[in-house]
Image 1 (cartoon, rainbow, N blue to C red):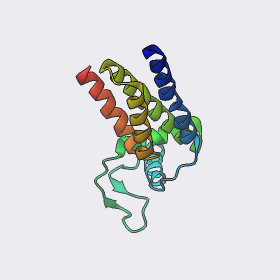
Image 2 (cartoon, rainbow, N blue to C red):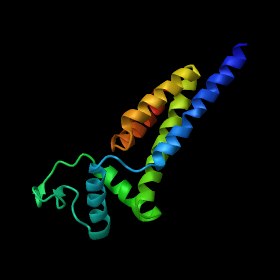
Image 3 (tube, one colour):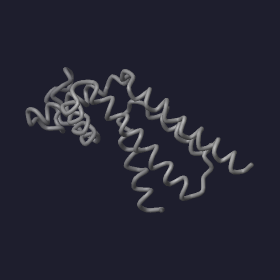
Length: 149
C-alpha cells in the first residue's frame, strides 16, 4: 500500500511538469523583460554598456546600478540563438526544468515526500513566472545542492 501511495505521489510531482512546459511557452506577461532584452541585445550587438541606461527616454545616458546584467546577456543570447521570442520562451522553460530537476534531486536526498515537492514546485513556478528572478532561483537551488547535499 505504501509503495502505491509513493507511485501516486511521484505521478503528481511529474504532473507539475505539464504546467511548467505550457506556461513556459506562453506569451511573456512581464513588460520589463523587454527593457532587459534590449539592454542585453545592445551589449551583444553594439558593445554598449550595461551600466548606462540607453533605452529609457527619461534616464537616457544616466548611469544605473544594474543587478540584472547577467540575466540581460543570457536572454539576449537565447534571443539571438533561437530567434526572437521563442528564445525567451526556451530560456524560461530551461530555467523551470532546471529548478524542477534540482528540487527533485535535493528533495529526494532529504527524504521529502513527492506531494511536498510537487506543491513547492507549483508555488515556485507561480511566484517566479516570467521574471528575471527565475535565473536567481536556479542559482540558489544549485548552490544549495552543492552546499547541503
